Amino acid sequence: LRQMGRHSEAQKELMATREILAKVLPAGHYVHGLATVELALLGQGQGQTARALAVMQEGIEILRSNRSSGMYLPMALLRQGELLLTQDRLDEAAARSEEAGKLLTTMLGPDMPSAHKADAARLTGLIHRAQGQDRAARQAFVAAYENYRPTLGSDHPRTQEARGWVAP
Image (tube, rainbow, N blue to C red):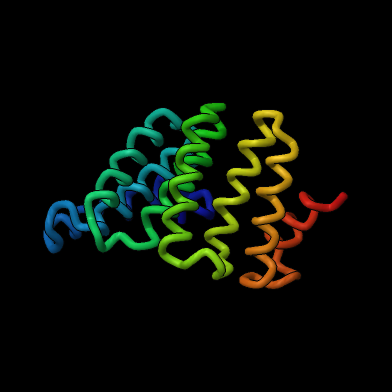
C-alpha cells in the first residue's frame, strides 16, 4: 500500500499489525524493528522527514539488539542512509552505507555478488557524487554495476541505470 501511495490506508493496516505483534511476540523481537522501519518509510512517503528519521533510528536500534535480524539490519541502514542523503547529511549517510556494506560483506562473503551489496555501493556512489568526489563515486558505481549484473541480469532497470553511471 505504501509503494502505491496509499499512505493513510497503509498506516492504518500497519498500526493494526503492530498491535497484534505486541500481543504475540516478545518486546525487542526483530519483527518489531521491521514494523518500526516500515512506519518510518510511511512517514518519509508523507513528507515527515524528521519524524521518519527518528522512527527509523528506533527500528534500527531494535534490529541491532536482536541477533535474528539478519539481512534486515543492513537493509534498514541503507534506507536510513538514503533518507539522510536527501537531507544533505552526507557524513551520517556515508556512515550508514559503510556499515551496511561491511555487514553485507561479512554475511555474504567478499566474492559473492549481491543486489544488496550493489545497493550499498550505489548509495556510496551517490554520497561521493554529492560531495564532489567524482572518482570515488565512479568506483562505487562500478561496484554497484558489478553486483547488479550477475544478480538482477543485464536487462534489469537497476543494472541499466548502473551501467549508465559507469559509461565513459
